[in-house]
Length: 227
Length: 267
Image (cartoon, rainbow over all chains, first blue to last red; front, top):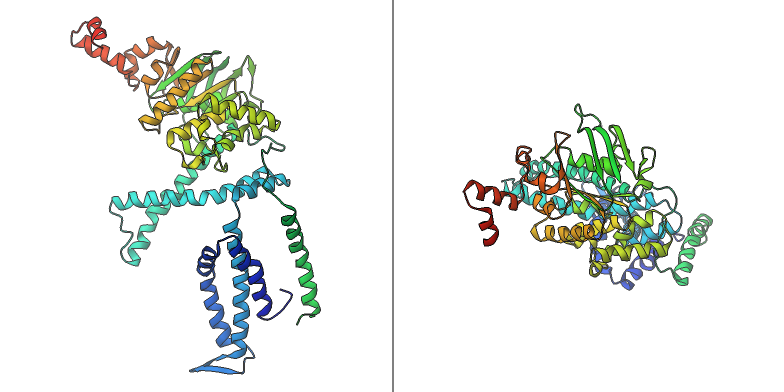
């Protein structure tokens, strides 16, 4: 974000998030997920800055004792673009990265197999827990648990679902740990890896360019050369 | 030979031992059956025989586990894993959860051992072939049926090339089709001369598979001997173990005054 104001983050969102998402054909999913993730914080940031921006004097709208200012609106827009840049980048990473390939690559680059395993297993565990929670929800509903009534009833219904889901997962961890032990996972030293994800010259160059862009943008911003 | 010598085992926090002075031997090329009611100590015995108890789960063990005459008390789990392989009841929790394909899942163990890539590939191919699941190699392990998952788990332990195989109720959570898949595979392993210790509630499965059977009761050996003799022993029912259908049929026929020879002819 070497360029300040709205322009810098907007360029970043376009170049680093939107164009890669379109290229990877995940723009629709990216848009939906990013909106869901960033909407609550975006709304609050917009309201706070629009109405309570310190030093705002160009009044756009007056509601009782508070007023929306143009300066607050501009700053809110800048904040919004930054939020979009961050949440969009994270979502793009999630949508376009194969967790399995990522951990294999991390291991190839010398990361401990245990750390790589934990990272991968954590990502894989989420859908498994969702499946388990769905099965438990169905079982509890079959026994009369109300999960679709009033808000209070829904809240009351959480405990009989969350409890077995978490306890079941903990019990599974013990057996999975034993299975890993029985398959030599605790052996010290490097594992044999059978394959490595494709890493083309262009990918490597782009990665290094992005790494180089970080200190460069800090220097440019600090120097104020691009406004 | 894999031998437990006067083994007693107490789980961490338990007040009563789960195994009491148990001595059994798994001879080379033999299939040894293990039966007993729930909480009789079958799973604990499997854990001890594989070395996981007390190494991985804590607790206190007295007595000895010997493999090929060697006391393996000081052997680390990853080294022991290459000598004794174990499969558990639940197919899903035995999978690593991080493999993208069945092939990688089966290769997971040899990869952990740091073997040369050529050896990993060779072992994986052999394990898949032994269990006749080559056609599953590219499938996502998490999308398999329970029986197929269990076969993959067993293939994963075979790929470690253990001399001894421990199977802790491998068909307990499977439907009849899954049970048939796994029992056929175990029968083929046995026919190929594998040394297998198998704990199982389904005595019908053990009847055609085992040369000897040990029955546990409250952590102690209650019956042991030739498979046919133990399975026909009336005390087996008192131990909470269902006798095989052939034994039950024979007993009912005898009770009804039907000549067994007639029964065999009509069967």
